[in-house]
Length: 492
Image (spheres, rainbow, N blue to C red):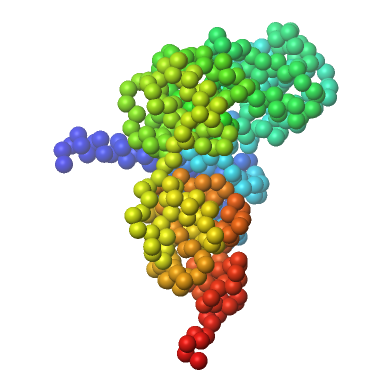
């Protein structure tokens, strides 16, 4: 290997490990003593073989770089539950990987329920330290607060104690993980804003535009619910910047334009397209929600609409209506085509996009193959009970289940029960089936297919048989209600 190649590899190795060094690796011998030294810490309990842990680690390390320099700092810790940290993991009731918990001064404060990407972890944990609303004492401090992050901010201006101030601080406590809050009682700050008892939402400067005001004053009742509603309605504006750490905040019906959204390297180019979307959004204000997203950051989401690769600079546009049905703008993007598309989504004139494998040519098999296009026929609209497994082809637990499930299909092939499976990575999973891991199995009794029950039992053939025998709408021909095989009358 050439010398310069070795040099480059060394630099790469050092840069990777520099990030890892910001994450504290602890074990049973030092966990309690060191964790107690930190006012706030996020702890990841992991196993080296865990796929989700491997995916999280680089994001965790990247977040640690930022959080260790925060004021006040937040420590990010990891502990191996298979080796040096077995006892600590047991004491913390860790049953799955990765498990994340927030500690304050050495004691567990709460389960971490935030995003799993670096930006999301940073935002969530920054909200965990210090007061929920920052007190600003001067005009300069307020300006610094408003420009410190490229996010909307909510600021309360109070000349004296009031019901509005109490409700504002209560709201800040509830929304601290999603919204940046500040407040001031200082005369210079209040005079500058011209507000003596009020709340103002400030949109970040990079999102300022001619279609909406950059600041909005709260005019509702002096209670926390009214303030929360005001923030939720106005926080992202007519066309919000939808990112991986805030995507859950955008509600249906929603139209999203994907393109090269980059407010660091190309803010002018980003706003060129966003302004055109704003023009359309203004026309539908209150009827549809709009957002822009980076096509590179959301390629996995674009795949769900059949968009494998997005060429060119123009936005591609998708939508979900109030029923969560999916739609794609098929015409080239323009203000005119987006306007027509938005109206058609609102009026229910479009054919929804359905991600689906082809319907099997022959489905006369013990374990039926469900795809999105035959799901209603096979699962919902038939007159039989259904046990359906949602799987992923790469899932080890799913592969282990295959022979068991095939045997179950054989045992149930003459019963009034359908045993089915569906590749949830290649097909849209319809509501109300909620699939967040693999395999996920549901029992759908006939006559109540709109309320399937998640199967939580064992994974052996006898476990499935006993469950089906007990819950079947009609007693099985081959098994009693306890799952015992009935005697074959031809042999008597």
